[in-house]
Image (cartoon, rainbow, N blue to C red; front, side, top):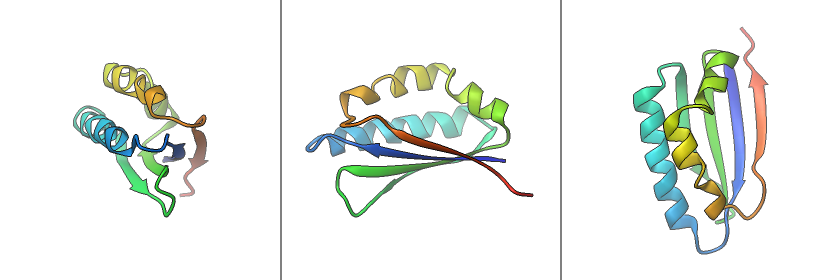
Length: 95
């Protein structure tokens, strides 16, 4: 397993649009990526900071995620909302 923690800082006032975009993306991932076993957005105590938790069956599944048409299209729109570059942590599962 491979886990991903993505910390996303959003521009003030753009949270609603960002959440809508991420709901659409999560629905596409869940419907089309069987090797993504968890994909969920979480709010933090800071109204502009979100955490996306992701889990994939393998590195190949994670790599494929970034190349899917739905991620290219919807993920490509993230820049409209971001206040800073995402902080992405990739974690190897311990079995």
